[in-house]
Image 1 (cartoon, rainbow, N blue to C red):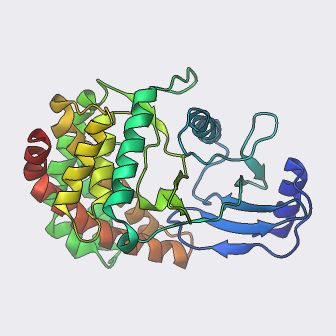
Image 2: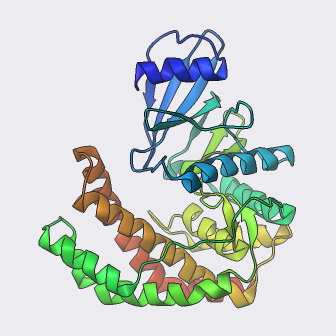
Length: 333
């Protein structure tokens, strides 16, 4: 971490002087996290990815709004972690580098093997509470969906092949399925817009820390937005029941039931669209990572992109394969 940036940031927030060099905290897929100790206390610093355009006022505004959302949910009893602010501003920008500063919390993100039914069902209940709060924030835009035309996907896959990236054959072999998924996702957007609430937007394992007392803390609210609640609980249930590793359909079913038992509402008319929304979100993440590999800023970015594409493509194809069975499970509850 740039030492000059650190000193300026601590001065800005009036948090004392650094005691020693920042310590890198590993685990993020996009940004870089640091642990710093100062004369005033301990803090976590999120150094935003260089891929984030901080000259775009809309991007900066979104970071401010999402931290405000986290703060408001915390005030309403949701265990949300939000950034330190000064004069209502959370994001600190210096030399075109962006930072968010948080109090250091003695808690940790757990690996997939440490996720059990008790923790997963608690997340389902928290999501139901978030949705029932129906938070109102006038400054927040209507839902915006990242979309890619089938033509642009085909061009990207062709470019990956010409660049001879490691996963180009895998992309080509599954292109028809990916195009079908993308087309259905684009057609589902209108349905997903029919019922929206403000929520976290990315509540998977990497965005929940657990204290020694097994209490959850919701972090990384930068994806907070207006979204379809049925989409979000299905997305979370897939993730927490192991869709990225070894899928546990019983846990998936239990999470949906716990959400409903906590008065969360599953809109049966939106279930199919919600699954296409989940798959479309994975398509968008895949596109981002393909571009990371084709036009890398550095070797670390390229390796991250390669690893993500190779991990995500099988997940997309698996959800696509079992989608109808999962819809039947939900409708049977």
